[in-house]
Image 1 (cartoon, rainbow over the protein chains, first blue to last red):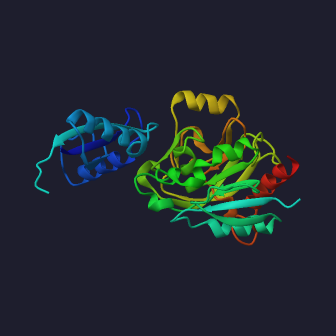
Image 2 (image 1 turned 90 degrees about the vertical axis):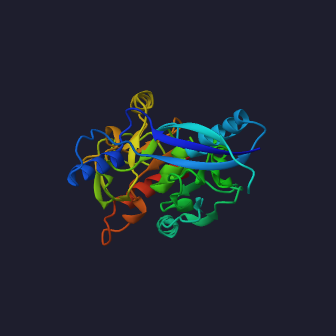
Image 3 (image 1 turned 60 degrees about the vertical axis):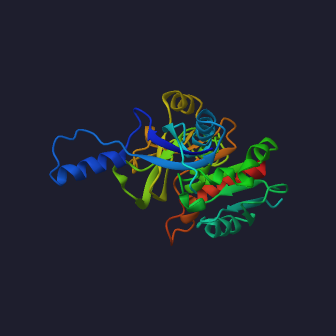
Length: 87
Length: 223
């Protein structure tokens, strides 16, 4: 079966986020009100074949752990969806 | 004995010729080493130079860490070799787990390109053994992701074991504890953000980089 795994990588709690802080400052400069924080991160969309959703999540999780996130700074989460077989 | 140095070229490295020229001017025999080479025999020193290895895609050093030459470095150091990572090379060493911590985007998202004053914090490593603790040197930095970050345990260990090699006097990038360079536990792997190869002459950029690299070659010759 074909799956789409979305890996979200975000900075760990307590790690400085200059990108988020700069975006928040720009939002304030543009007049957007009521926003108190911005966290930056990355999102990766992986397409893979796997026997089931659990296997797809495990394999995408390994990619996230070994490559997509740096464990010193970042943490990752994986969401898996089954794809139609149209391709 | 002539010291032999290999300067690694990743796709996107851009300081490798400066390092070869700098080491050559100090009497070492320096050659370029393509990142797919896995044979480091015959070398005393491997330098990972500055630049944008593999385009810095994903994170600086994140892809370079899987290059064959990087996989050989731990064994190379185990055989008595020395490794110096400069700027992007420092980022590669942290991504590869050969040095602790990580280099993050500079505080304020500011690219910094200027001379910085550094204090020599420790001399028990391959780079600074010929300098004095507390001595100041002036070396250029040129980076966007040089904010040294490590968890509290790693920072305590680095400080307690004398592995902070160089510290900024006026922190340009938000680095924890003003750290500009560190070593591994053996002192044979050093990573630093400043570029000593760009301070090789009093006429251009100052001569303090020459003092650091002379110290490095002296330490290796004495070993």
